[in-house]
Every structure is written in structure tokens, then in C-alpha cells.
Length: 191
Ligand code: 5GP
Image (tube, rainbow, N blue to C red; front, side):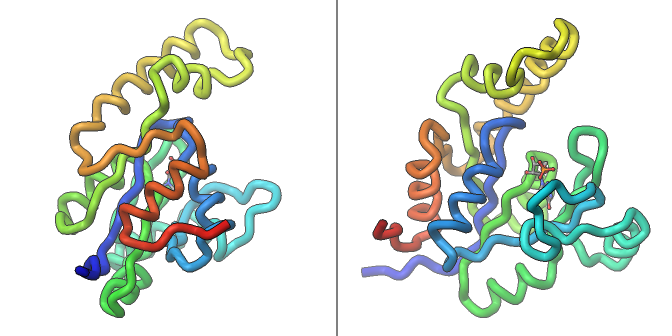
């Protein structure tokens, strides 16, 4: 039997595919999986805990992290806030022989592909393009222009799929999480 080498796994995918839901399911059912805590300049949402869901930092603090090379990757997401992966915790984890997981956007995944090509890249995909559009458009309160803009974004993001090593379809959150954990070489949850 071979033991999979501890490595970095990067989970990315189009907007609204459900990366956040998969992360939440991971935290709940796989507390042994180490998930990187990103730094972000956005404000906490109700229920979000500083240091657990994100490190909530000021734009000045984020500037400092970028200037000092503290981030493995970073990006402006949805044209608004900055998000980045603190480098040191990931490096320490891997150096200790333990697997690590990043849940980041496509721009960030491409940066990691350049700096850490030995990582494995997992694309979280919707069951279908129609389903992604349904999730993106939500309750349908957007006007026609906004719907068209979101659809165009979804098409561009879906085109990134061939850049990835593996595709996990988010048809069912628990199933998708289990598949991701198996790709990381970790045992499945027993519940
Ligand atoms: P939210 O604000 O809804 O928590 O996250 C918005 C987006 O930011 C998601 O697509 C998420 O994958 C992405 N994101 C979260 N942390 C990071 C990070 O450290 N780096 C990058 N590039 N994207 C991130």
C-alpha cells in the first residue's frame, strides 16, 4: 500500500458553484482537514468569526502583507474586495508532512499553478450550465442586463475547467466533499 505524499490541494470553480458550502461541510464533517484561512478586506458577515472563516484586515494591513511577500497568492474578487492566502501556515503545514487545502477563486488558483505547480488543482463544477445560471441569478430579482453579465461571467469561468487536474461535480454537497477528501488521500467520514 502506498501512502499519498502530503501535498497542497487547490479548490476553485465558477462563482455560485457552492465552494463556500463545500468548505462549510468540510469544517463540519472533516475537522481533521486543514483548510487555509484567507485574509480579506471585506467586512465580516453575520456569524463569521475572525481567524476562523477569514482574517478580516484593513486595506492598509493587506497592502503590508502584499509588500512583505506574506501572501502565497491574492486577487481582487468580483471587482471589489481583496482576498489572499497567508503563505507561512501553508508552508509549515506541508513541511510537517500534512496535507493542506485552499479554497480560492480562479485567479488565485492560476497564481498557485505558477508558483507551486506540484499542487493538485480541483475544479468544482455545477451539474449543468443551466443549474449554474439558476444559482447565479438566484431569486431572479436582477434585471436583464445583470443576468446577461452574470451569464457571461459564468461562461468565461466554466472555460477554465481544462486547466484543472480533477473535476468534482457539486450535485450534492456531502458527496462532493467526500470526493474532494478522497482526492486529498484522506479517509472518508464515517457518519
Ligand atoms: P466570499 O466573500 O463569498 O466569502 O468569497 C468570495 C470569493 O473569494 C470566493 O470565490 C472565494 O473562493 C474567494 N476567495 C476566498 N479566499 C480567497 C483567497 O485567499 N484568495 C483568492 N484568490 N480568492 C479567495
